[in-house]
Amino acid sequence: MPRLTLCLMLAIAAAPALADKAPTTLPVPPSGIIGIANNAMLAPDFWIRQSAQPDRVLLDAGEIAQRNANLLKVDASMHDLHALPAQLDRATVTGWITDLSQYPRRKLYDAKGQPVPDSLRDQLTDALALDAVPAQQASRYGMIVRRAALRTFPTDTRVFTSNDDTDIDRFQETAEFPGTPVLIAHTSRDGRWLFVVSPRYAAWTHRENVAEGTSTEVLAYAGRTPRRIVTGGTVRTVFTPEQPAVSQLQLDMGIAVPVLSDLPPDQPVNGQSPYASYAVELPIRQADGKLAFSPALIQRNADTQDDYLPLTEANIIRQAFKFLGERYGWGHDYDGRDCSGFVSDVYRSLGVQMPRNTSKQAISPGFTHQAFGEKDSHDARLKAAMALKVGDLVYIPGHVMMVIGKLDGEPYVIHDTGGISYRDGKGLRGVKLNEVSVTPLLPLMYDDTHTYVDRMTSIVHVRP
Image (cartoon, rainbow, N blue to C red):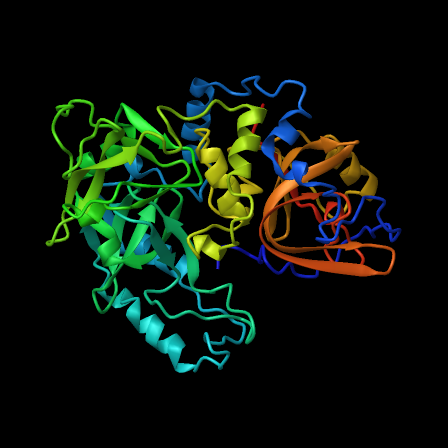
């Protein structure tokens, strides 16, 4: 699995520095969420007021575009679909598949808590149909037409490494959204699944999630203007019985869709006047699996903009807080997102592209990052933590947090997490969250002896 450990259940690991065992002095309200003294702290404006220059542009659109282009060049986890060859060889395709489709070594359980039979490994290995990968094949392209789960294997079977926790499906990788271009690299043995390569992932998805088109029409879609950028957590298109494929279609934060500006303003779109909506063009899958496009409506009062939001501290905070309280969804499951999906979706609404997973984000050569290892002392780590700025990303094994500012000198973060623990004077207290949450950073305990700060692996600075 690409994600080395879980955002939801952080593993206990050895570290050179020990935590201060003194209990925190921050308030502990009835909720148990340390440091959250009142509900005002759960509003973005509270944190924006802590910023000295909340509206200062940290990177302009041109600088962000240069960074995104560089990311595709220097980060091996990203895929520049424009640069892929016209022909793919067997080694390339089987390499993509075998890098991903690795059966977990740990004992697996099904949704009822029963052990998964060993025969599943052989079934799924056969389903990959690696023997059917041709020596050479023409590169085929497609487009995601609806929020699509990307899976480790070509199966909907859900498996878990615990018999009493069904939140983390070990075969769930991520999700891609409508309009995402993909390379179609292979088909499963039964023909129901496609192995696709998107700009930041390669995995299996249902054939029905992808419409096949020419490279020109697929790759040109993302750059079309004018456009609307989804800046809400999620936005849905207007209901339409005339075109079910684009009726109440979920569009997640950061998606860009082209606007049909040349439609007659007095003519209905899918049976409805467009005067109170934006008429956009969305991909659909025809009966033969080919790509077509259909007009759809997004209400004007929906949370969208005509371009990516400026990269400012205020916008970073506002966008992050739009997910506050959303249920944790491993691999974008549960119609939500996990810790790395959360931060990347927020930054995507600001025009900034990121790798999908924590393990790649934390070390990406496309970003400025400060790495920490066994030789780094507690004092050095604490000094770095105290220098954090709004929007910085803090990584510990299997988890990432976004900095939203300081209060009384204490750095605070927003993160999509299963829970937190801290010392409250009586011992180590754990609180289950399972949602996007606001917490202080310094008191959080990784295990019974190490703080999050002592287990930091990297700090990524998206700003200059």
